[in-house]
Picture 1: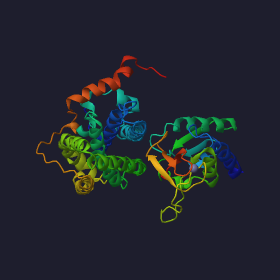
Picture 2: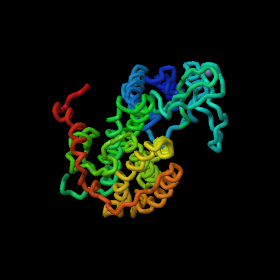
Picture 3: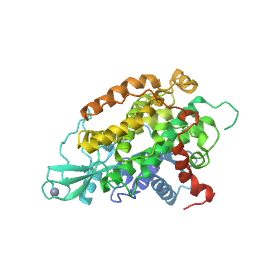
Picture 4: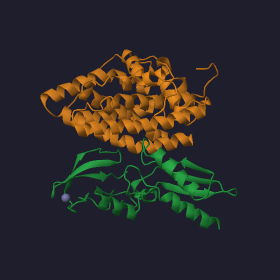
Length: 161
Length: 254
Ligand SMILES: [Zn+2]
């Protein structure tokens, strides 16, 4: 029973979206770390920030708490867990696909040896592999600005982190 | 400050929190004024990372010193003599070359510091540092790219970069100072020995300067005092600007 309840809370909490990239849920991002329910129905949810200064974190905390309360649990604590530090390797395949469809090049995957499995950052508009970094940072710290060498469109790239 | 002996680890985390906060504020002063839109975005993103690191460290400081001070108390309710940041981070932005030089010198120091703190016996500090390493690696890369471009650029950019390094170099000696606080935290395995960081810092900075066709300035003047609350003149002005709103309207909220 407890695992069914935990799974349900986890699903509900995981549906909270990132206010800065609203196509991604926190489950897609991989920042939802753990859900626990104790004997007196107190819920603990652990989440991790993408970057130390992520301004979306407080909104996400509040949204998670609200959703868990809406699911019938009055007592909920949303903890921020720093260790081990979040990495883009925890982003789900669904999250990567949604990012691409949204027009943001997803972070490239890394193998067990931390080397990138795919070298090119592909243009999310035309799919060309020939793209260049224009600026290290973009509208958020987690993204860089790039331009496509084929269709010339500028686009954002969710940096490997 | 109370007369009760404070845990040296709390003083140590406060020093690094103040470093992050003060540099974050200086970088934020470039907002809407940077040489290009991309650079505006880059500098303010770095400022945001540093602010996040500062917040985590202020929270840890209050746990260690048991004062219960909030992040806002630390930032807005302390006076100049209570801040224990190094002098390097408070130096004015100057022209863009000064900002780049400050970032190169400080990010190199910060990266080595966070790497060492990743193995801290204080698990919360270790977690904050492990998170920050990734961010600062990016800051340093950014500063390095600009140092190469300006140093190995035009005669004008080279001269400005040279002058910037000469202006800021004296403040780097303070980064590696030891005192009773660092002796204590090093002995307890909370932090790495600042003097050990020196060798890594030297070789890293020297390599960038060499590639950028810049020379390491030589100076015998090594101002110090930041870690004891003794700051350079420009810091008071920065603090007044940063704290004015909060103090003029106590308890104000968005
Ligand atoms: Zn394209």
